[in-house]
Length: 77
Image (cartoon, rainbow, N blue to C red; front, side, top):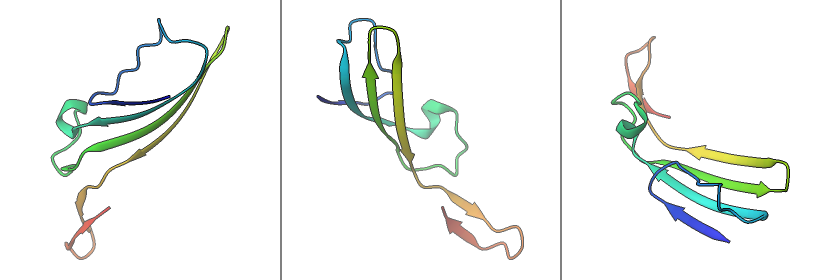
């Protein structure tokens, strides 16, 4: 089952057992990140719920602009 959310919250109280996949999107100000993070924060989540445990795998990606300490050039990372 694939879900899309615009925040980084997964409600697990009513979640059935099994594997659940999510694509979560948030904005850097909502997470308290610095101004150089100007793109969305994308999180791919695979959550497996069993009777006694939760297993979570996450992949996080975004882009940010930084300045090189040595040459002062701006670069994206």
